[in-house]
Image (tube, rainbow, N blue to C red; front, side):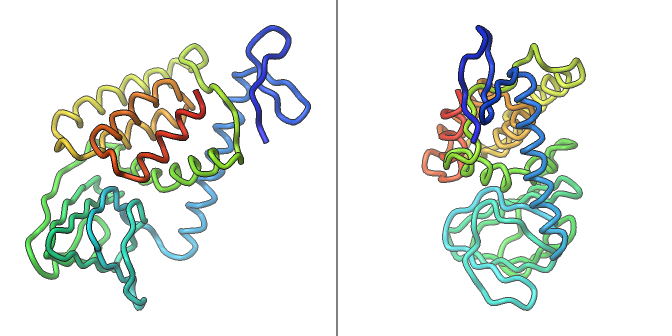
Length: 243
């Protein structure tokens, strides 16, 4: 368990019975997040390669893996090649392909099969497709794991207040944040009002550096655009608990 406290008159974090400087603790927590992401990624790779992520879903969408029984699709589930999705009238699904940075929006009635870089239409109207900026799809692919990290953090598995600060970032890291802000702004201008893909991307970048203060307005924007999205609510609650 991690806990925040004041030690020796400066901002420190206690881990067990030891006090650590905040900068060191940030690096420790970044390593923990990286290990969680790597562990989940390696586990998935052992089964089959993920090709895409469902980053928005509404309605009762049916899903079936290769040779598997049909079940209900879930938001932020990972997609493998050959997975089939069936959308009834009124349902909507948005999928981001990791290789190729292609985002597709499907509206029912329709069905499709996942390929390696894009979907194969089976029935109904074709998807609306958009090309995401370089590097965005890879960050979106981390979101399912980031939601799990948020749940773990809120359950007490990782309970540290505060986080990274720009003063603790290297020049390269600050440049990365600056570029991400620019990319986010460009994506926000082009994205539909209800699409929170730009926010999910920027959240993922900021999470890499534990910049919880800057993540707060991002999660606020997610909830403004999709107030009933349970995953956005989870991310927002997690960030709020860290400030």
